[in-house]
Image 1 (tube, rainbow, N blue to C red):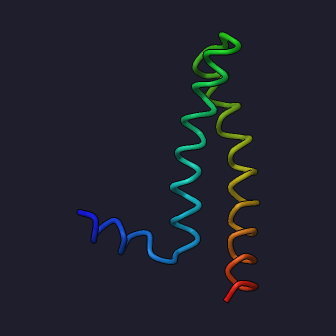
Image 2: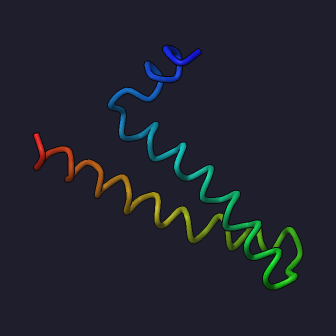
Length: 70
């Protein structure tokens, strides 16, 4: 199982970004729901918009990081 996960995640910035994004959306939706009492739709919407923007930033940052640290 560990070998499968390692091969899936090995060096691919897009996969890394997608895994990060899924976790971020789940955490953000939970936080908005718990703190504000918003509906699941509202907290889900906030959780999709903000992390989506962060995901683009993370993808760009990760590619730049790899390029300048090789």
